[in-house]
Length: 211
Ligand code: AP5
Ligand code: MG
Ligand code: ZN
Image 1 (tube, rainbow, N blue to C red):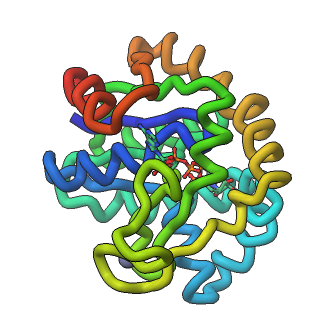
Image 2: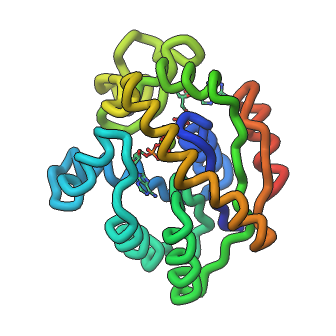
């Protein structure tokens, strides 16, 4: 089954997607990760997105939709997870068209529900590998050797948009633009709420029960 995994910044979308990729062979499509890869490679798309991302604002719909379309065309039948897309109602509408055009279907939109105080603590402590993107947390999941990725040995750093003031802008953008999607998915009969609080493994079990 193909799924949309959505939730506020810090809800655990990336963490849970990594487990679904590893254990269920699904393909993760994270628009945030794709943008960060473009920024690193200094592409035009990357420079268009960077100003918005650094400020904690959403990248304009037209840019995001075109990027996702390229990925969806090229999936080759693998089950996928949309992580961080769609994030606005116009993006969700564009997704419907893209799915139709490519003969694809979404089974469920799984919403990871996490209270604000927990989100803030997760983002404040998050560290990410600059090379492979592996995600850590200074308290909950530190790398074995400080500042060094367990998987590839590269430097582990704080994401630019995890600085305190930017986090608040991101949470506001989420509340304003992305929360209304709950209603959108509910009307499609796809909406499922899953508690995103607790141990990573517990949450994984809750999510995979819906697949
Ligand atoms: P994106 O990269 O998608 O960021 P986000 O939605 O803000 O979500 P995060 O990646 O911050 O959180 P997450 O839910 O993946 O949490 P994680 O698993 O890492 O987007 C970044 C930017 O790109 C946007 O602001 C926007 O500018 C742009 N963009 C992207 N998509 C777009 C779109 N569709 N439209 C427009 N603009 C777009 O976990 C967080 C931390 O918590 C980690 O440290 C982790 O180790 C820890 N953690 C996870 N689970 C647990 C647990 N159960 N217990 C304790 N700690 C945990
Ligand atoms: Mg993420
Ligand atoms: Zn790494």
